[in-house]
Length: 177
Image (cartoon, rainbow, N blue to C red; front, top):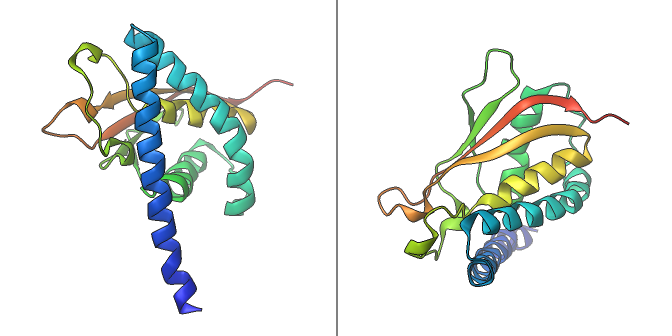
């Protein structure tokens, strides 16, 4: 039994590294296909939404999470369970609004930042924007309407190359039937 459990982290690491390399290749191809960073950012968001809509079923089946009662619980589950499960990191949930309808997720280490060099001509590229789309798509599937923006993606900055800062904002509410 102990041998099996020691193999899982290695398999997870290989899968994560493969994902990072594949993601980098995808972004590089988008940079070739589109001239404007705004168009690349939109494509990353759109692809992420499609992934999130499919990923939520896997997440709910594997996590055994009960229904969240409020937005605080939802953000906590996203940070402590979903990010950990799929990216191997746990963002801090910070900067809650007084009304409890928006907060920030802060990743000190962005797992997507490995092996990345953004060309200077793509200074407005939001490299990690697909994560926003994944969160939007997944939350849409559980009938929550939330706007998610990538406020800070420091993949381009050599001094602080690993942090990533998302904001979940707007009034989280159930989608109408």
